[in-house]
Length: 298
Image 1 (cartoon, rainbow, N blue to C red):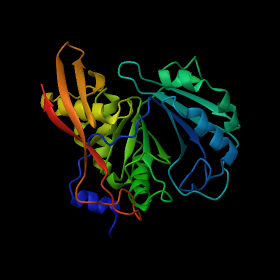
Image 2 (cartoon, one colour):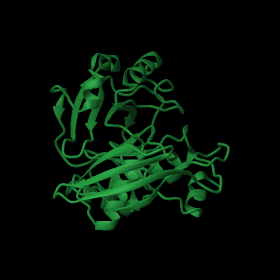
Image 3 (cartoon, helix red, strand yellow):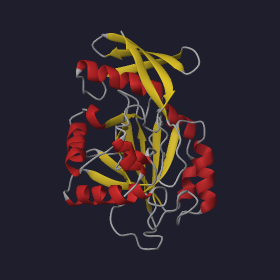
Image 4 (cartoon, rainbow, N blue to C red):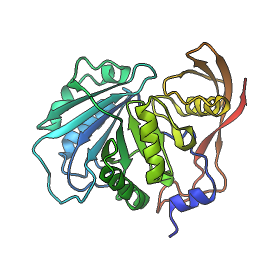
């Protein structure tokens, strides 16, 4: 089958520095089918979906819908909605949970504070292992359904961690993709075996650079620098590195990487178009997605 995922694999497109950026994730349970723009094309009230999306704009909060893996009848599901809020800053990550009867209740949240890492005692702390979010929205891209839904089902059947289907993580061509809380690392081109390895690593406070697309807390240039340092040093502790990103001219950045033991590196990053052209999603016109190249690391 000629899919965006198959072509990305054929081109050996790098996974690094492709994670969607978000300091904080706001995840709302919504049963039933999802459209391509799930916040306004699901059983969630479209006006509420638009208002929540607007409220998140510019705050660092990224919103998505979640549902339990399995068959999805065309109904609104239970009268209550689980809500998961996860902040992903290194050394300051947290996950909070609450239940609402109407997602409109969430419009009273202080989104700027959540994006900055202050939960204000919202809900209750998450207790348990990592939370796995597997992208499965076939209306957004068929690869997510064809590859993501079986992965979510397999992880659930194995009883491994807490697993949810999620509407959109970006990077369909890297399917199956998964974001794992509390650290907010995104992963791609997974199998059931590698996904289980990632969840076990996360439970131990580690990340898995081989399949990593980046930590969503960082912008893409910083994601590239972090991955470069991890590959250089073999460091896998999720919270070992912090980054400071500085512009260095058109399409270039200098990123300072600091290890918690005091070691420091400096990476030169440049944006460049990927060649040859390829569709970033099934059915889209081929384009040249921007990649982040590590020019030097000191």
